[in-house]
Length: 407
Image (cartoon, rainbow, N blue to C red; front, side, top):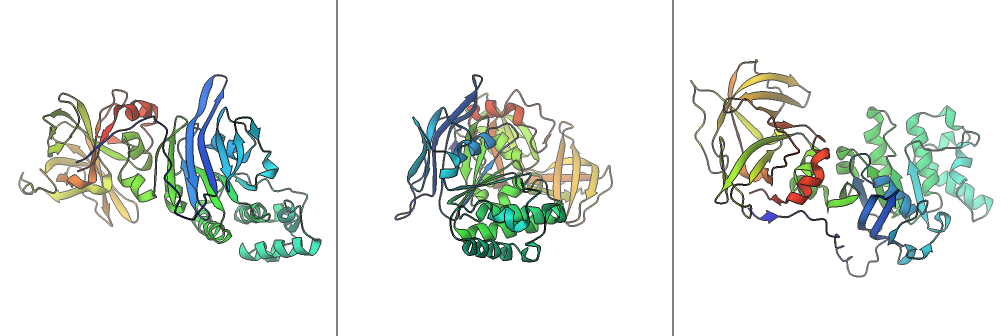
């Protein structure tokens, strides 16, 4: 088990592939309002055709970062570079209309008095009337709204308005597309399909896309890279798989899903628990640690006259609990158990249908390579289950504490 450390030092940007120029570079962006830092040393790189997602809770600085990149907000420090050309730098602020950046927001911001065609053409400032009309028709075909070319926004559904807003943002062929919660106003039944269609069109256009969202599922679905923000900083960055499966701290893990937490004390780089020993290298003796496991990685087995399965190196020791409740959610069942060893509640996610009655004894274990060990934070009070997003209040303390990686 390797040791990981969380730090507030600036994040170094990986070099771009040989021969490729980043479409968007952000270096050390900082912004304060009334003496309160809102964006703190944010750096990232987005290549042509890449979708990067700024993910984090409300108030973490995502939208302010987007506004600085767009040029509608100034930075106290840092640089914004588009295709090698500085847009924001000390003593330099290129106005928004000269940055070659497209914007999409939650409310779509369509002009109610203009037709669909006129809305899409609004940002086209060059070319003949025929050229503008051809570009409008091309984009409306791509978003499958050509039959509404002469309609007005109030005649369209929310999903159709969103697609018009996308066509309008793409009309001037922006080099960078900034999207601030663009799908949050859509009905859940429409959202997935429209997100996928939008992603396909953005990839075809070759724009660098920076998407802001507070929804982990949306980030995982759309992004090539996720930049997880908290308290104005990017605390972790990487491919969705890596950010999900190698969280930098407990708050990062909890942002993506519910967590089960088992607390213990380090002795000789090991932590004893009812589930056996866990490695905690690099953590001093006497440190209280949290062993974190997602509900889908718990394993359940039947009670055999008060006995459970034999321990294994991969899954450790099995511990007994009693079912509190079980609920069927369609693709999976959620089973909550009160553990015999301390009365804490653990939650297991089981594929398909598994609905044991309350009071049923079951045995619980989990694979060592699916758990994480982090120094405990006194700001978080554990009862075994940490629900998604509950750790935001203590996130800064956790980030400073450091972490041990999963075995």
